[in-house]
Image (cartoon, rainbow, N blue to C red; front, side):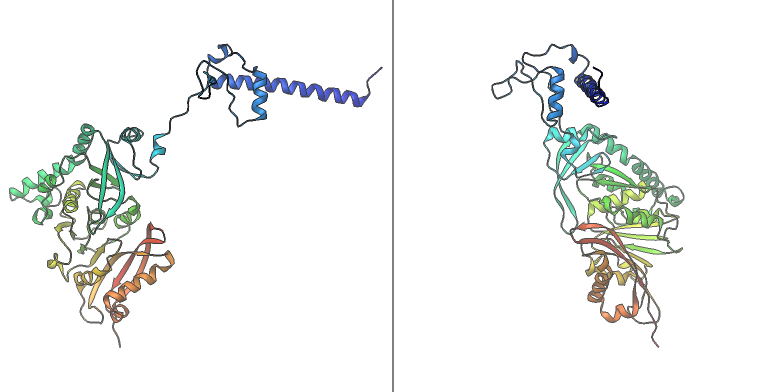
Length: 429
C-alpha cells in the first residue's frame, strides 16, 4: 500500500533527526579528543566508563557537570579519580596583585604576597622587574614618605639596573664639576652648574641617595626622566597630566623667575625647565633631604643647560629658606596635597612687588594644588581657602581664579585639583 504524503514527510523528518544526532555525536567526540591531546584517543577506556556517545549526551544534558571516570588514584571519597582529568590551572601571578605601580625595575604592590608569589609576579613583566615592594600603609607624614616592605629582590640584577639608570647623570656631573673646578665656563659645556652653588651638591647627592642601591630606579614620562629611590620617596603616576601640562602648556615669558615651594624630586621643576619656553631661573625648595638630592640628580639626568634655565636646589622649609628670592618671582608652584593653604601668604611674598594698586601689591601667577569634595565645588573651595588665608579684601581686589583643572581622584569624594591664580592689583576709582 503506497504511503500517504503526510507519512512521507514524517519519515523524512525522522531520518533527518537521526542523521543530526549521529553527526552531532561524531563532532562532540572529535572535539573531546582534540582537547585532551593527541594520545588520549588511543588510551583504553577505564572499566565502567560510559561510551563516547553516551558521554556526549550527558554533557548536553548537564553541561556544567564534570564527567569523571574511575582510576587507580583515589578522589578523596574512597572512589577513583579520572587519570585523564586536567589538573587545576595555577593562578595567574598578575591576579595575585591587581593593584600595583611599576617604577622602572621596581614594582610597588598593594597586596601582601608570599616571597615565592612575589618572585613569580616579578617574572611576569617585560622588561624585567627585580624588586617587589609592599605598600601596606600608603604615604604618611608631612614629607609624604612611603613605608614599604621588600617582598622580593634580585640584588645583583637590581644593582646593575640602578647603575645603568644613574650613569648618564653621574657622567654629566663629573664633567661639569671638573669644568667648574678649573674655573672654565661650564654653562657652555654641560648641565646646570647652579646646583653646585646651592645647598645641594649633585656630587654629594650621588652618595646621599645610596648610589647604587637596588631601589634606585628611573621613570621616563612625557620626555622627562626621573631618578627615584622607590623605597624612600613617592612618585604618583596619577599626576602625569599635570606634569605634562607644565612641559607642554605653560608658556613662560623670557626672563621669568619661578619658585617651586614643594619641589620633591623635580615633579614640576624639571618638566618646566625642559619645556620649549623655559624660565630664566628656577629656585626649587624641598624639605626632604633625599628628595632634594634626587632633584639635583634629575637636573643633570635631563641635561638642563644653564644657558637656558638656571636651577638652584635649596633644601629646607620654604617658610624659613628662600628669602633671597622674596619679591622676585613671576610664578610660584604649590604642588603639595592634601593641604597647603597655610602656605599661601608665603607664596604671595615670593611674587614680585607691583607698583601702585590695591590688594597685596603683588603681581604674578600661582599654581595652587588643593582637594575638593567634587569637581563642581572646586571653584568655591579655592575661593574659601584664599579668603581664609589672605582676607576677603585682598582676594576681591587682587586675585583672580583664572582656571581650575581636575588632576585625579584622591580619595572617595575628594578630588585633586589645581587652580591657576592670577595676582595683580586692580585699581579702584
